[in-house]
Length: 309
Image (tube, rainbow, N blue to C red; front, top):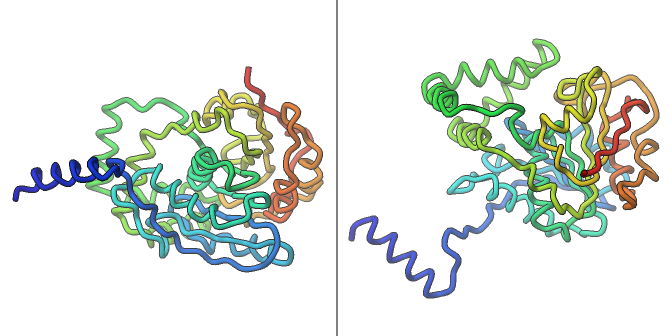
């Protein structure tokens, strides 16, 4: 039997049995979890691994149930086939669904934040709050088709140099850049290429519309420079059309802000606690863990509240 004929018959059989065409079971993500109390699910960024969060996990361990997750195709987590960000978000939701929804917070760094938001938007009943760290919901600038093709060609022909250049430039210094690249190089090249290709078409800004879960955006100095107003960052990063969200900037911080030691200031919990977003109180679950995430150095002058127009 020809492959195309077999695929067509499989689709017809699935339709006859009432199975949705194209549906796939979410992959099971590799976890490390410990501790007791409210759950905090920690999601690393592209090219990272779950143990990047270990310093944060140690701070939360005394009074939280900490869940560190390997993103799909990273560490010990399998890659969805076929690959899509929706499939990655569904895998994350599978983790969230096993927690106690009334006391579960998800914290996502970079692309991990985007996928965390997608999971929260799909199933808000599975959690009580979301913290996004340096998460861009769409490319800051439109990418012409010609540049896309050139980028795809670069991925295929010179991926190792591309990967090294990208991750070493992300570091605050050369030592951190070398460390970031070494970690990213452990991820299979085919998996990273799939992520990079999908990123060019990413626009998750629509996930914010109608979001029922309390949301906090936390930006490092790298993504949110001192001299730039939140309104501009919101427009560039895909938050301009959002409903009410809280946004904070961490001074003197880099791409791994939870490993940095910004200058002391009021703890994040004091900045956030009691804050109201369009009449809805930010959940305490957003404040307690946040004060342990290495997110010290929050400047009172950088407090912002974004409301939809």
